[in-house]
Image (cartoon, rainbow, N blue to C red; front, side, top):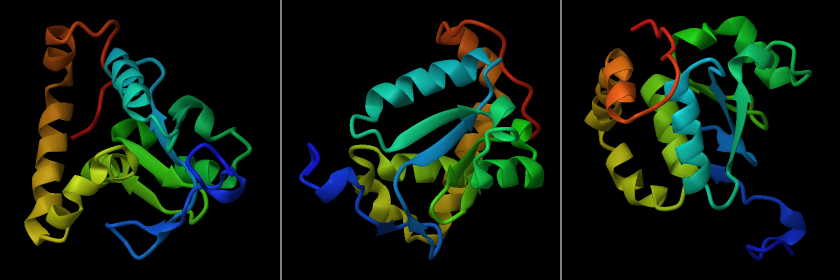
Length: 155
């Protein structure tokens, strides 16, 4: 048993709220290694992720990672244009607001938002919120004291 009472240290399979796919193990968050805003966000997510549900991989290394799901995501999606999260077990990939929801879903306390996600407007609201943060990442990064430039995200 692992420290969370699960046999063999494996994570419990559960349905992802955005699709009918199943989340297997850790989600891979692809981030821009050259972006101070992305680096600061990853730092904060690592602190929140007490159970190790997330793995962080630079988008610059995804295409040559030797990991099929990440290489496929790099080939199919403009990774530098928006946040992407990959479930290597199912091959599912989420972007933008949906990626943010996938991240929150596996973090401690994320279960509190599950009832809201069943409401149709919720994904729209999260998507708009994601777009606002992305559009103002330079100002937000400066105001929050993040070091380094913010990546150029296409909105």
